[in-house]
Image (cartoon, rainbow, N blue to C red; front, side, top):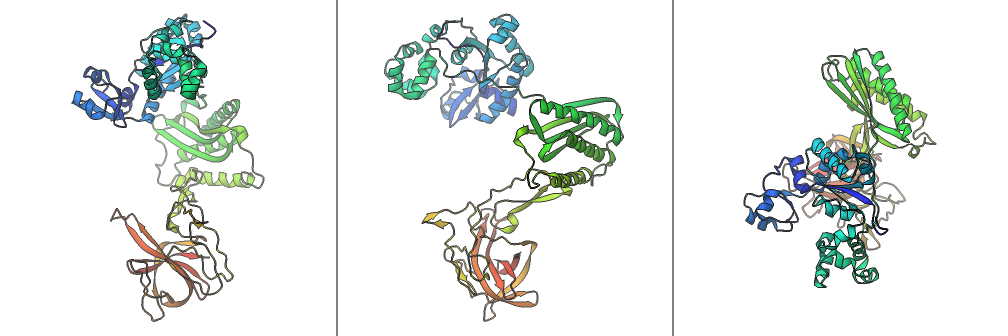
Length: 562
C-alpha cells in the first residue's frame, strides 16, 4: 500500500435502501415498482421501477407517467435509520468497529476481518452471508483504500488491490462526489473524471472552489478527510435468571431478586455507570409476562435495586394492587432486570441540603413502596407547564415518573411593584382598563421592553402572581356595577359598567380593585372544543382576591389568591 493511500476499508452497501426500509417498516413490497420521493423528486427506486424507465432525480409526476402502476412512498430518514439498525447489529456479530456512513451503508477496517476469516474476499463473503441470514437483506461489499473508494467499489462488489485505489478512481465520473453545484462547475470547465480533478494542484482547488472543494479534491485522490469513527456496540447490561422450581413465595423470590440485583450492580460498576431507571420483568410458569419500570432521581445502589425488586415481587405475588388480578396464575420461572436508564457514575453526587440526601431517600422509598402495592397511580405529584389558564398549567404524574410538562412553559411575568397591595397584578393588554383602589402602581405594557416585543409563547396568559387555589369547578357568582346592573363585556372588550359588587351566593362584597379583561378565544376552529371568555382579577373589601371569568354572560370564580 502506498504512503498516500488510506487504510484498507470494508464497506457494506445495501442497494435501494429507502425502498427496502419501506418494505421492512411499512410492508410495501419492494418486488414491485416502488419509488421513495423527497421534495417531489425521486430519491430511490426499486429494480422493477428502473425497468420502466424511472430514475433518481425525476419529478413524481414524470415518474408516474413512465410507470402508471408506481407505488410512491414519502422519504423518512428516521424510518431508514431504524430499519438499518438490525443490519449493523448483524455485522457487529462477526466484526467490530462498525461505522454507519448513512442508512444503507456501514464501514469498518478490513484488516481484522480479513485476518480472522483468511483473506479480504472471504471476509466480504462472510459479512454478506451474515446479513442475508440474520436480516434477509441483500448487500454488496467493496474493499479499497479509504471509505469513499470502498463505497464506489461496493456498487460493483469489487475488491480493489492495495495501492491501486487512485488508479481505480481515475476513470470514475465526477458525479460520484455527490456535490451537484461543484460537479456542474467542473463539467463546464472540462473536468469530467475524478482523475482529472485529482490532477489539479490542491492549492488552486482551495482558492477556486473553497474548503468543500478541497475536501472533494482529497476524495478524488483517494484520501479520506477523516478516519473511521467506529461505533462501539452498547454493552449488554441486563441480567436474568431461570428457575426450575417456580417461585411462589415472596421471600424465595426476593432472595433470587437480590442475587440478580448484585450482579446488575457489579456489571454497571464495571462500565462506570449508575442506574436511574430499572425495568423488572418476570415470566410465570404458564407463560404470563409481567413488567414494571421503576424510576429514581438518584443512583440506585445494589441494596436499592434489591429493595425495589422485592417490593415489586411482593406486589405481584400477593396481588395487593388496587384493581389488579389477585395474583399470577402460576409461580415465576424467569426474572430479568434491565437498566432502562443509565448515566456515568460520577455525574451524580449527593445533595448538600437534602436534595438527594437521606430524608429524601426515605420518603422516596416509602412512596415507591406504596406504588408497588397499590399501583403507580396511587401516588401523584404536580408538574407545572404552559397554558393560558391556571387549570391548564398543572398536571399530575405518578411519583418517580419524569416531570416533563406536556406544554412548554412561558417565562413568568415580573412581580408588580406597588405601595399598597390591593390589586393582584397589573400586566394588562393594550386597551384594557386598570382601576387600582389605593396606592400607585407602575408597570410596563406586557411583552414590551425598550420598544421591542418580547411576548412569551402563551399570548393571553395571566401575569404573576399565580393563584394559590384553583377550583376544580368554577363557582358561579354575579358581578354588578354601581347601579346594580350586571356587568358585561362586548366583542370589542368594552365593559357595560365598572365592577362594583361581587355577589357570592347571597353575600355581596364590595370590589375595591380590579384589572382586566384578559380575553381568551381558544380552539375557535373546532366548535365542539371552542372556549371563549374574558378574565378579571378582583380584590374585595375584606382583602380576599379572586380570578373571575365571564363566558356566555355568566360570571364564575376560577381561582382564589392567597
